[in-house]
Length: 217
Image 1 (cartoon, rainbow, N blue to C red):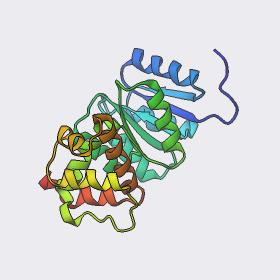
Image 2 (spheres, rainbow, N blue to C red):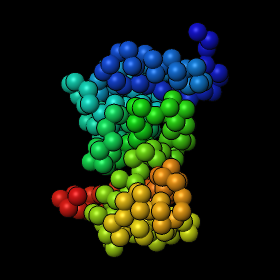
Image 3 (cartoon, one colour):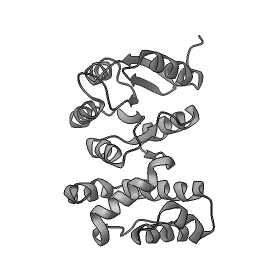
Image 4 (spheres, one colour):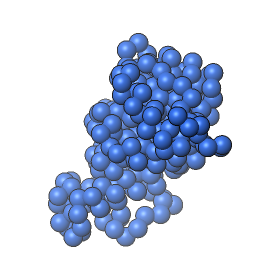
């Protein structure tokens, strides 16, 4: 196996399935990311971060012992500087919301192409957010349900079509109705929803909205 290029991003993979973890490590290394450690649970992930100071932890949520969610919370509390990218089988809005509130900088699904995982690692390592388009609309709807008119968008720059998507979400339209209303495909609706989320995430407003009314979601 060739060495990663100098200056490449450094990552820890935390997942309790060894075959999946090793396969992902091979794929990431082939994409130029230096996988410096692998961990089977959240506690081992924290120790790996302390020992290797990676740029990103690619974190599964459901692991034995300490969960990925708890590990993410602890890493955020410690202010280690290592970003967390959740990579999970769960597309449930509650799991995505919990991960973001715990301190994760991104969330992608395990069935997404490895190219998306690589792009997400680069995004979160550079201080940006990455929410998989496949789950973005559901999370956007969850946030709007929680915050409603109280969702603070002052200063958030959205395109005309993104504003239309947000308006249709507020009116309770599903993805097919939104696509029909805008005359675009489902993929475009998901991409717009992801873009809206990442715009709102930049200054912490999404976390504030999610915390504001947790009982109402």
